[in-house]
Length: 69
Image 1 (cartoon, rainbow, N blue to C red):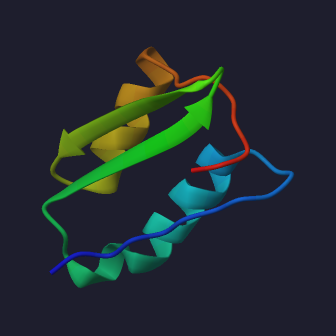
Image 2 (image 1 turned 180 degrees about the horizontal axis):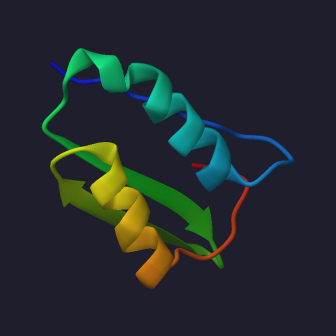
Protein backbone atom coordinates (compact mmCIF):
# COMPACT_ATOMS: atom_id res chain seq x y z
CA UNK A 1 0.00 0.00 0.00
CA UNK A 2 1.18 3.53 -0.64
CA UNK A 3 0.13 7.07 0.10
CA UNK A 4 0.99 9.92 -2.22
CA UNK A 5 0.91 13.61 -1.37
CA UNK A 6 1.57 16.29 -3.97
CA UNK A 7 1.66 20.07 -3.90
CA UNK A 8 1.91 22.93 -6.38
CA UNK A 9 1.56 26.45 -4.99
CA UNK A 10 3.25 29.39 -3.36
CA UNK A 11 4.38 27.77 -0.10
CA UNK A 12 7.37 25.53 0.55
CA UNK A 13 6.42 22.24 -1.11
CA UNK A 14 8.60 20.26 1.29
CA UNK A 15 6.74 21.58 4.34
CA UNK A 16 3.34 20.84 2.81
CA UNK A 17 4.31 17.34 1.66
CA UNK A 18 5.86 16.39 5.01
CA UNK A 19 2.70 17.60 6.79
CA UNK A 20 0.61 15.46 4.43
CA UNK A 21 2.78 12.41 5.05
CA UNK A 22 2.37 12.91 8.80
CA UNK A 23 -1.40 12.69 8.31
CA UNK A 24 -0.93 9.32 6.59
CA UNK A 25 1.60 7.97 9.09
CA UNK A 26 -1.01 6.03 11.09
CA UNK A 27 -1.28 3.61 8.15
CA UNK A 28 2.07 2.08 9.12
CA UNK A 29 4.18 2.60 6.02
CA UNK A 30 7.68 1.13 6.10
CA UNK A 31 9.43 4.01 4.31
CA UNK A 32 8.97 7.58 3.13
CA UNK A 33 10.37 9.80 0.42
CA UNK A 34 9.96 13.30 -0.97
CA UNK A 35 10.86 15.03 -4.22
CA UNK A 36 10.96 18.76 -4.90
CA UNK A 37 11.22 20.50 -8.25
CA UNK A 38 13.84 23.23 -7.77
CA UNK A 39 16.55 24.96 -9.76
CA UNK A 40 15.39 23.33 -12.99
CA UNK A 41 15.79 19.80 -11.64
CA UNK A 42 14.34 17.23 -9.29
CA UNK A 43 15.83 16.78 -5.81
CA UNK A 44 14.75 13.77 -3.77
CA UNK A 45 15.34 12.03 -0.46
CA UNK A 46 14.03 8.74 0.90
CA UNK A 47 14.50 6.73 4.04
CA UNK A 48 13.35 3.35 5.34
CA UNK A 49 11.38 3.18 8.56
CA UNK A 50 9.21 5.83 10.14
CA UNK A 51 8.78 9.35 8.80
CA UNK A 52 10.99 10.71 11.59
CA UNK A 53 13.94 8.97 9.87
CA UNK A 54 13.32 10.99 6.72
CA UNK A 55 12.94 14.19 8.73
CA UNK A 56 16.32 13.57 10.40
CA UNK A 57 17.88 12.94 6.99
CA UNK A 58 16.51 16.26 5.71
CA UNK A 59 18.01 18.14 8.68
CA UNK A 60 21.46 16.82 7.82
CA UNK A 61 21.01 16.97 4.04
CA UNK A 62 18.33 19.54 3.20
CA UNK A 63 16.68 19.66 -0.20
CA UNK A 64 16.60 22.91 -2.16
CA UNK A 65 13.55 25.09 -1.72
CA UNK A 66 10.76 24.70 -4.26
CA UNK A 67 7.04 25.20 -4.62
CA UNK A 68 6.27 21.90 -6.39
CA UNK A 69 6.66 18.60 -4.61
